[in-house]
Image 1 (tube, rainbow, N blue to C red):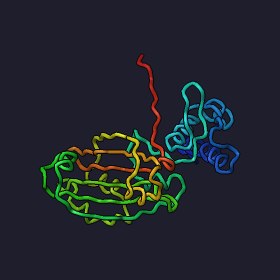
Image 2: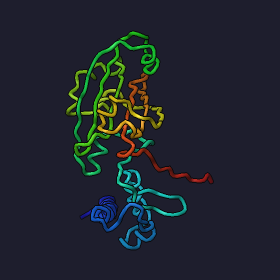
Image 3: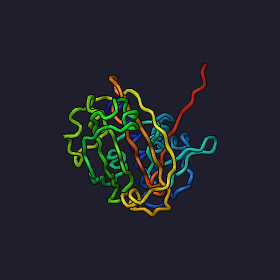
Image 4: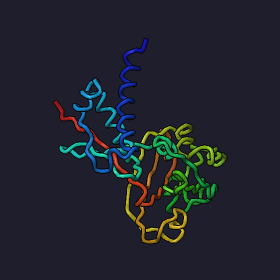
Length: 243
């Protein structure tokens, strides 16, 4: 007998699947308005909470977009990474039903420059790990990751096979995340970045700079570059007035 939790989960997934099918078949296009929570709840004979969960997950995945006071709409075709949570790029791509691959450019031990030591909170000229990886979705580059890692907190980082795992996956295991700070800016690529991402020199990019911490200190500092015409960064917040 199906328990209550499994039943709710199945109905929640059913709503997501139905909406995804309409989008993928072309029945719904970017900009089209989606049924409201109340309408979905009535249509699928579920609670409003179940309908809300389906919509919220699709919003967080970048498939739908909310406009406060207006409604929920089919988003555009560019994938979106949440700025409110840290997820591994391969998980994002797999969740969209697409194929993840990467190109590992370098895995090195270097002496930290003055700037790099400030980013990681380590002495200047101390040994740090440095990786450069291009992440691809269905064979198309969507992120260039330039990452510095503190070897004191992740001593075996450089030994990992990054063709089989990602920095996020590995670091989350050995130095669980407790804090993060990041910034986002629009830039124009130089020749090298344009070649790595296979874009024109006049194509704007999104640069996300992110520093992550464990309970013992700064674990890594990453600069993540995305082609602006292939990627978006966003998120959804719910605000509940205090009683």
